[in-house]
Length: 196
Ligand SMILES: [Zn+2]
Image 1 (cartoon, rainbow, N blue to C red):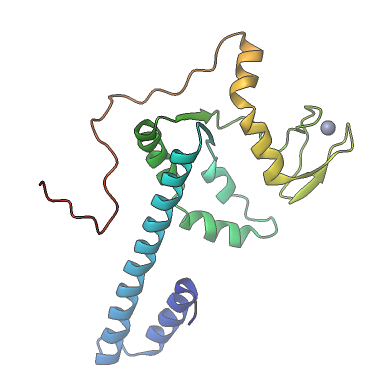
Image 2 (tube, rainbow, N blue to C red; image 1 turned 60 degrees about the vertical axis):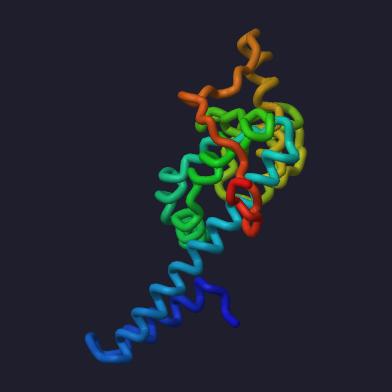
């Protein structure tokens, strides 16, 4: 079976060949609606799984304020189309929203790094900052260290709270988010939720 996104493209093509208003056209429409719903359900499920696992198993989580709008604008670069597709799809704000409340459920701390922190293009070995474009892997001009883009960014983000306290001489404070909602983790699906 093809993956839901490619199945969706196939169904869209199929519908475009059918005559508007015909029985077959309506059947295509219905299939497309169902598939959209299924894709949404799969995504919701995976994001919840991921954020629950992260919040349960990590004492401190640092997230980056990804400048999604800026990334979507880099049209002329290689892979830009795939990136636009992926990002437009990814519901970037949702995992962070979930982490905000789940971290408080499970007693872990969520730290949100500044969205202008150059996590990808700062060499984690020597601290040199350089322009790296969209390369997956890059070499530091100063110390010649070779970095994987995401691994390097992850290391810099992991150090983020410490960087802040070093630079500012203060303690990195976790981001505060309005009122504390009196919610707690719900039992897993399938568990009988009626009051006993
Ligand atoms: Zn370096």
